[in-house]
Figure (cartoon, rainbow, N blue to C red):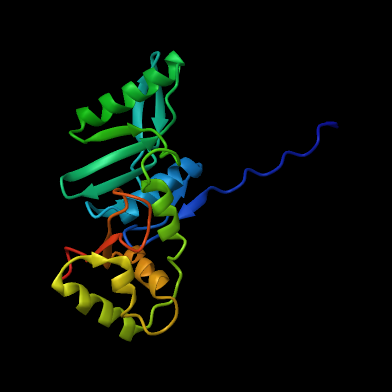
Length: 203
């Protein structure tokens, strides 16, 4: 009889869901989740979906690789992996093979570094916005906010004043998570002057 302790079950992968996700997407680590949050708030991204597995050849062996996710953008579709740069030759060969396999199928592919909290403000802004995704917005407030933004972009603090039920800023950020409103998350830290606009795809 084995004296080894019982093996703990493998913990389930986290799942990412949002207005742009066509279905729940499995998330390997926090870096992938951060990349998904940024994509969910990026005006150029129309949809986010799980990526199809692909078979690559490594040292004469067929290996199944599952990229992290697939984006449908204004410029077309792109398959994405999120990995930290590695000096290991085996890791570099793997992602070179993944890129070559997608190119052979006519698919755009990128291996991106995980977003970093230091430097450009996009990640920290995106995290702050995404924290408001479950804030309830009254239907009347949603209609007022979208109607106000028909006239064009305006500062966040000004747009928030139209909200009558609850925290106005949190409500506007929640509408952004629902893909109804766009925010400029790259120009500077989230603040009262952050520009807000109606989603360009809305009538």
